[in-house]
Length: 509
Image 1: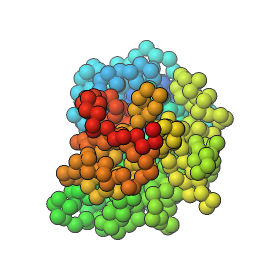
Image 2: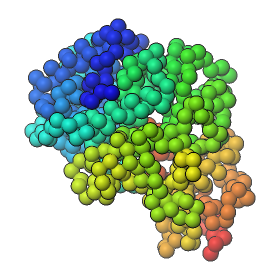
Image 3: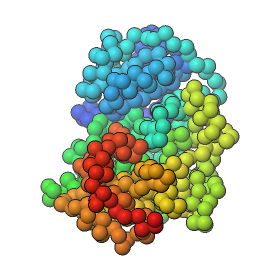
Image 4: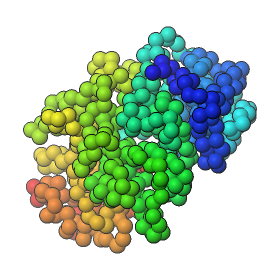
């Protein structure tokens, strides 16, 4: 196994295919190594030093890969950020990280190009895979550079921040290289595979579990910079053989196939998986029926680089557990309640070095090196199977009863007309009410859904308000930003409060 991130692309033969861009431009491993060397030389000449942070504002493309590998060669930290962020968000991350410069995949993204202009990226770094634009260097300090790959930081990714401000997660070369190998093993990848890279490369799922896993085994990446059912279905028909994705992508693919009355064509596809968001049983069943493959489910966190547990293709499951912990990973439950549910604690070679410039948060999350307090509620069965039950801070205490949002969400999505549901608490006096925001396929009233739900769940788990909405506030990966739901839909909630007859009575009062 490679010790350093840039060594992940060193073993494959020069002529082996490495990347395929959205415009069908193909590059082999020899090309990729050459591009990496050219860019490392250019960035070094531009003023990037070992220990600097290089902020990469990007969409998926070969030049993005070259930037990641070039930073590794220079012993700098790569900081990938989705080009769909706002300028103010990018400014906040640049200032917090102390980035030496900002690099933009302007050729592959209109958003990255617009940001390059906003941030005065007036230097072009020419690459035959697509030129990059870079800002002047900022007056920042370089961090120390350790000789040990378990200590030297390779990448810093900022968490979405579901309950608080985003944090800079410092991941070492050893963290990422370990996860690359474990992810390739999990998916049974070989050098003949073409891995579909539709997940944003700025997110840990696309960054490490997709890109680095493919390079670890000498497979190729088929890039789709932005998800669309048509693009993904085209890539599958053209030979993509492994597809890691988020549940929402499968939902949109199934909807597209149904609406267009077309059949799935995926002649080489042997592996599909969902992660990054809860998987509901109905979607799993429908996806497996169309794809003819088990939809593997997984559990990961940026701070664990990211994979913790996953179901195995050779041992498919008919539930929505996240399978057992991966090899070399131990998951335990802290302070379990009567149902065996408690906070999941992870011991893993993938556990981060810490949060950048936040020793207090690092100490709280890392009771010891290599051990991480996830903040996730779960239970572990006697056979090692792990079930995720929610977040510690998502727990709703309704009239003294504990309510886990994923349980209510899973029940709501069993309704045949419900596409997706998000359940959150809302503080009212000394109690918490349950709010359910729901996306539906066809006409379905909130009162009809409430009536349907009533016999499905115990009284104290019934939402006080159900809102049918067109969309959710979401991260670029499709992950619902649950902490923003109450403020995002404040107008709906205020209108509802103005008419008390629309509030479900509290049967536990």
